[in-house]
Length: 438
Image (tube, rainbow, N blue to C red):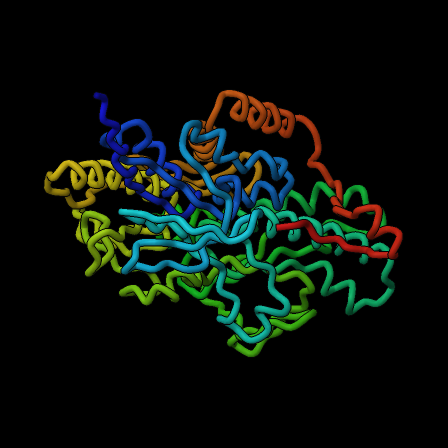
């Protein structure tokens, strides 16, 4: 007589977060988990955003859909749920996820947090009300629209003070994002203003405020200085050692008592943890989850963290790993190996990685880079930047689309389309929305 035995329960390794770290980890684990284990990836968005390319969206160097990659396309065969995790019961090893079909519960045996960081808008008075963060694709499109709105308003305004505020664009932060968006803005405003006859390009000013002694402090001083000179040649007013103290609707008050008239202020500094991290009451280190050398959350047995949300030591130099895409990818690959070793009863290994280099663009055909100790600036650095991120893009089709768009931009002016995602119902109600959905 045949006796039917129940199938053994399937155990789950869940990942929360679909950025560089989370998707790299899922890709590295897919097809390698022991028998009886399944992989689950949960993300609030259905795509991964290539955040280093957001300044390209601001400056109309690429279309917004070119800097995102669908997670389902990147990870075929991996179970993916689009939703926001609202609660985690560590004792029961269950999580609640708000999805398009309502709240759903999932059990897990191991949970990996790859939540990234969110923009912080309370660093300065007036920042939340008047500054424009650059963290999401929607932010980049909104900034681009605001710049085009400023040009259109200058055309229609005869008030000298208003025209002065509209013609100055202030970028706060002299790190990679700040330098890149300042260079992209300088090129974009110069190109777009030709189509607005009542504006004059020589009247526009891009001001980059940085409270440090030099730009790009992560790079050697010579490259930071080279970036400053490159931006200055594009007409960007680089002000190092300058700190914004208050942001108003039409001006920025500086710590030295000066005031810069500006109706468009872009903020590239300040991050905060995902609210889920705060709800979990995890050990923190300077706003990041405190992680062991192997990626396990400090004091936890089945909870792991990586990427921008984690403060993970790097055994290579003893320092905390920086929140960059390069390290997020490396951490994802290392944690995949450690998780497999743990599931197979083997000892884990500390994360150790030597950075290959860092780079930033300062506008069209210009950039700075440090690659394996070699310092580059100008066109070679710009080409290296584009080549690296082109290779990071998943699928040949997406690489080809971006390459075509970048090649097109070498010979033709930047696109000045002001995208207003207005629906028929909005038009009937007389709405004039100019923002893009997030």
